[in-house]
Image (cartoon, rainbow over all chains, first blue to last red):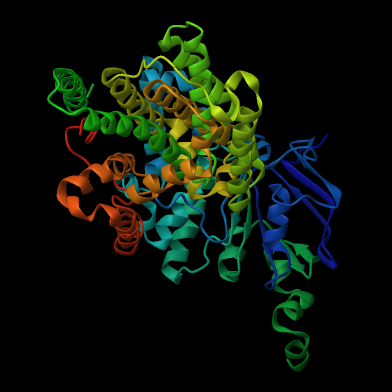
Length: 261
Length: 311
């Protein structure tokens, strides 16, 4: 029905009496990067949760590649091409980096329980294939040497990278990044910036939706930005336009400050 | 095959043959023999519970239900003249079906609610058995042919250990462990967690059914009272004491706990009346000193993966 990879029309979500998301609309083109910004509690993560069906919208439609996602659950959403990372990293902490990536590659492994109990040749060939693929993924960020480390022993920045790789392993069309730079220092953030650029070059048709508080980062990386406050979209536009928007300044700094200025 | 695996295989076979020889030769008194056979039966039960509790991370209180299904199915079939190997297989499959139900429940309920629901299912099974004529009612089934011998029990112990190990080291096992770590993340990766929860419960119940069938063939008599809440707790204690998520831990603690009365008898024979007090004290002490169990999540690594399967 459209050329958009993802299209949301008038999404609404109520938590009891609280209107968490109000008439949110979004069009995502292939290969572009979109930013979602706004003060704390503006509903940014809630929007991502709506897109990945952690919550179900009260009204409105989400079209993924032209398909209505109304009847899908999070699992199917991923199979139709949305992968995400989480605000508070959700890695499998007791498992190794390699195993984390392999779980992401799960739907590419084609062997049955029978194959794994009887260790058929198919099991070995599939496992070998998967090992190579996951090492190839790890090589994007140059962290092959960490493959056998337990995730809980990794630094914060590396954990973020692993989580992004794990999401990439599912071969998404759209990658949702929820505060990828949260808790990072400036050099780590720069590094993350390079990392995301690298992925953009590697997978040209992939779109990104990024939530981030670091303005430098978001202005540099996004093609288009949506600003949310109290669940409403208060502004949208190219990074330059957003930077000069009075209303955005108000939302971020509080009305008074803006007036005094 | 890796060299270590070949060693493990050879050692398992050797210890099976050796153990069978010792048991058959009459060196060991009958009471010890009973304990050794019971350890084997409990081993399969605790290994299977460890699969859902330790690897899938779902807390259930109904493991005795699976045992009961396995035990009664096999007892009835063998009494009616069926070959016991086929009977054990059928009872494992029957128990697996009950596991399917618990698996479906586990995908809808979580935590404490699942524990209560699984307890409910095992009670339903028990009461079902009590009230159906063919199962002998509350008096139970008598004169079941005693088909469980050392070789059969310990072959199945090794089989179940190996099968669990093989599943854990495959994509199925990885996904099951990932569900324990973070279910939401697994869902976000396009994996149906429901499918894997059901799978884990089916495999677990399958082996619990085998354990039950061996139980029936070992006792020769079955009463529904045996498969109550306390039996589930007994197996649960073995898993928790050994370390949730450590198969060798389960093996060690099952061996110790089942053999406890005998060990007690040997070392401090004149304190027999304080046995249960000391049993409880040991449990409390282990939990204080090693809160995550004897082995934690680690595996005991020697060339013999079966640990003390021969005692």
